[in-house]
Image (cartoon, one colour):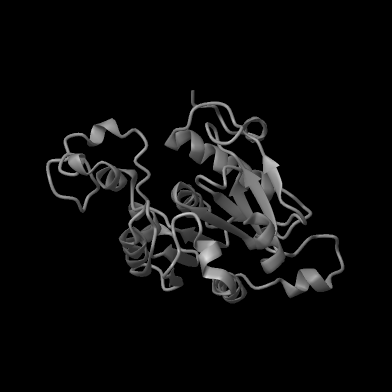
Length: 256
């Protein structure tokens, strides 16, 4: 997907594997992964060879939950957010994956006593985050998603759109959890390009100044692309991978 993204969107891609994913060591937790993503964004924001005003966060599945938090926490560093097949919360997903627990565990909208919610140490409640995001948001939903019910994306959009008039929802009838980009074909890439053109326009002043800064928009993407990608648009000519050890050097703190 990344190579096609670079070719179709003429963008730069920055990839990272947060702790516990891909080749990164450590153990995943909501606190730790959030710090890893923040460290990567801080690093990108300090570079002088990119247009830091055009950083876009892209996240699929868990990457969307991470990306939503990162975007909310950095209104001055992130220009826009793209969410694809993301869940409302881990608590809600517990009831989807383990139906027999649905009465005992779930998010605010679920029924039942929810007496087992305390067992979930990383709730990733995206539904509580999207309504606080002020930047433009693009929602990409595969209607054949076999892992996250498409209604989760619809709920996220409704929550965000109630507070933010720069939200766009686009569904893809044959898209599954991991292949919406493939099933969507040209329509998928055109949708992203149009969203970027409208909400993150190219800085003509930087382009005409003749400096060496790369004005192309860019993406931050986690290395475990086949699992839970998080991606940010940043200004590199080619995508690069950032391992957990590298993130640690950038300032993230291990949460072991």
